[in-house]
Image (cartoon, rainbow, N blue to C red; front, side, top):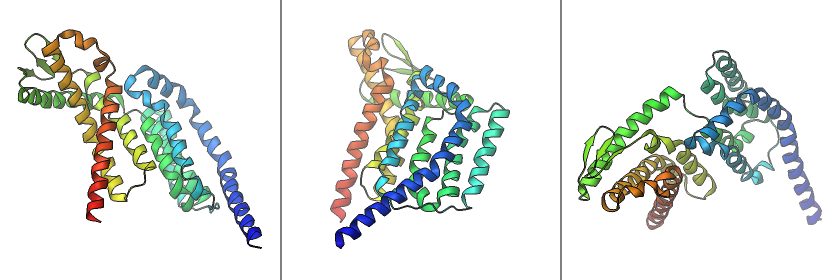
Length: 291
């Protein structure tokens, strides 16, 4: 008798999960079809600019974040809610405005809003509670407006140069800073757009959010890790700039041709991941010592 009840429970959960995906499947595909005209230009930007190349991975990571919550979704039955309608209207309205005004950022950023509104409207708040993280994660695949990016990039270059100059002076490397230029004894280095912290911030924030979404940690530690991802990303880039300058000073300009300098995005990614793991370990031990 107990085994029969268990079988019914499993079948009921399976039916609930199936009905949820069936209920959402066609409307979501229709919504994606509405946005399909935006995809070619977006993909070209991912391919053309190295600091945007993480966009190719974002939809896959978003799908994985949803898949990680499949156990919870098995018990969720569709419960349509009118609370999703305002979000849906705002998302579709932003799409129309963005397309007709040729503001690609507005049109693109409306996609997560539309998908979230559609989820709440058709499946209810319970389903949205488990699906929102995957939907919201799609924000990381959308580039900032070009004018905003250039402004942030310049300010980032100046800040990175300021901190790098102080660090080099403290480490005993003779340096004279002039804006984004670092004058060493034998060569002048420029903190160019490709060397600024802002280039990799979006990708590294995406890394931090993905990391805290899959590890089991108290909420306070998760929030702390996400908040610290930004300063860790900036720190990683400054470490890279300082070590490159040290290499040029002591070993010559040939170090600028090394993979460490050429593949700046990969180096920053690995350094930030390392710092994130160290911080996570420290926070877990701190929390354990206070328990």
